[in-house]
Length: 138
Image (cartoon, rainbow, N blue to C red):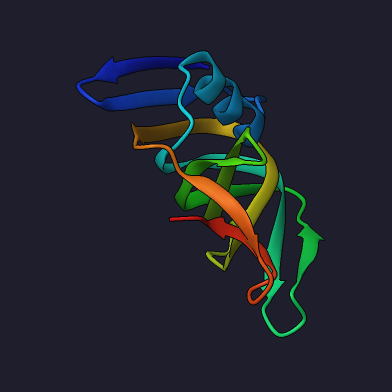
């Protein structure tokens, strides 16, 4: 992983074979960023995605195998129980141009991982019984 700062924006490159979530967490900890906005593109392999079933208040998780184009990756950094938490959603495309999407639990970079991160004021997540998730406590 390599990164540079331009004004208030960080430009982050995650290298082939590196874990997306782990490297973004490492970056946030190194730069002491506790909250922020994340956007990115690239290519990943063997992603694990989740879908939150609102009526059941639970995640359904599925492992995918192979390489995927990461057409869009959006998310944020916030504090959850006092720890930095990276929350990402992705839209992925396979070799047949079929798309899948959801909450990104894990994936490794297969080609390139290019991200912009913009720090914000501190945001904390708090469990909301109505939703069944840790959501922003504003």
